[in-house]
Image 1 (cartoon, one colour):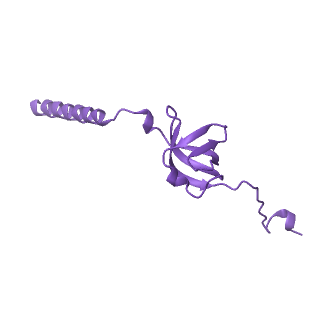
Image 2 (cartoon, rainbow, N blue to C red):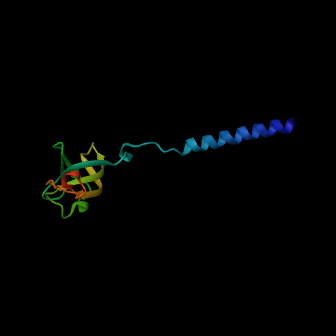
Image 3 (cartoon, one colour):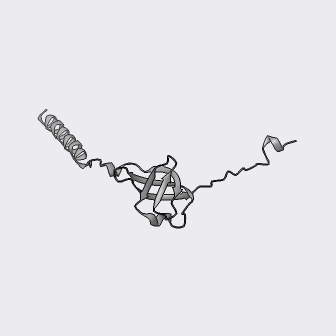
Length: 112
């Protein structure tokens, strides 16, 4: 009976230590460690600012990502620092400003 009680106490103690260690590993969440955001907008002519689709102007902290896309419409995945009005760009994709239509020969409009 004593060995069963000691084993149970050891198991409870080990479980509580493991849970406590997991709680201690959690880092505090800072505002700069937020999720990336997708923003649509146009790159300025100097390539250092992004005019978003909501008519707000953002300064780009890493303008080398926008090299060659000046004046174009882009979709940007970035981290936003709203206090400093800055964007840190992770990914850039050029968007087509003109609509294009695609047809499929298998569509019902082409069947006879």
